[in-house]
Length: 303
Image 1 (cartoon, rainbow, N blue to C red):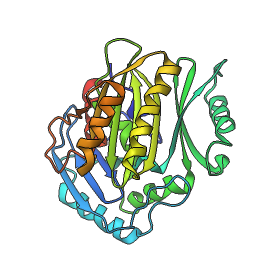
Image 2: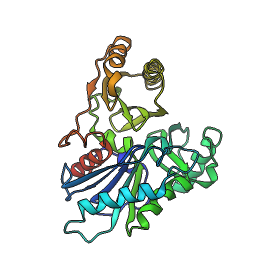
Image 3: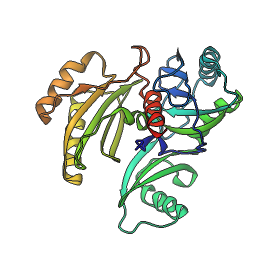
Image 4: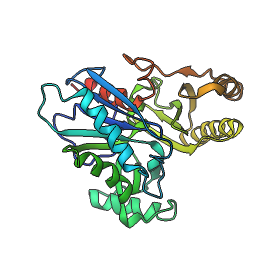
């Protein structure tokens, strides 16, 4: 069974799914092309972005240097080409900080999609720093919970418009780590939690999931490493208190020079030794783009 996280944020999900993707971070963009069923890209090109050209945020437009980002995207797409496919649909994997993701408990689940979206807007109205009535909303039902993602329409449209002006059609829009969670191996038991600690482009994401269920995704800008350790610990306690389970696996990637001290403290606090996230088939320069490889893993499993 395919891991469902890549389908959380859908705009147009086509069958077959896109075989072309762009993954964005604050400091780079990666373009990847593959053949259906592949577990690694056939072609992948990475382009750095000038400082400040892309500033991920859930409250304002993200592309502050539109021309610079467009030039990087154009160059990367030209390098990988379209292969033998004439399709123009493309997946967009946005920085985690571009949206808000939350898990909403629901006593009585509505039966209609529009009613669930209305419920999500109502429950998140005071929890997000933007107008929920003018926001893009996506959700996935998890038993008695709703996993919801929300971002201002202007944020999503900036990324979509960028590729539309180049002649491409956004076929899937999601967050980078939501796609990358397909690479995180959960425990076998329903209450066995797996945590991912990921650094990318000046932001850090903490996500916890158990088989088929995301329990939390917390994103913040890089700051004091001790604050990050505390965030990791409090996230594990949150999972323990709310899911009545224990974080039994911890994966890490992109944490930089301070990784060893940080992970040593995490192991001391939680009694679990963090392990590197394995990105199958990725060259060292490609490994930070876990969204692309996570999406490939999910698509390969679904075939």
